[in-house]
Length: 108
Image (cartoon, rainbow, N blue to C red; front, side, top):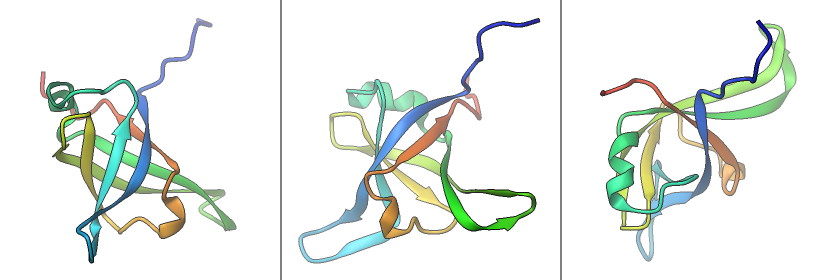
């Protein structure tokens, strides 16, 4: 049953933390989802799970890879940027890095 691999996520990029002119709020991250360019397109992704996957130096549970899980909360602006919250705040070195925006849970 060889065939093309199916990817169950859409790529996204971490832009930074929610912030004002003087303060930044590390509990909320701003993400740009690939292929999402309007506020109306964001509606599909609300509530979807996100994983920031990174590689660590120490082996745990048989793997060097770890993930910080989160959720898409709401839109940010009109250009398809979203606000997301993670179970643990993202580390500063993740800025500019990539995330996986999974296509579940489905609201269809």
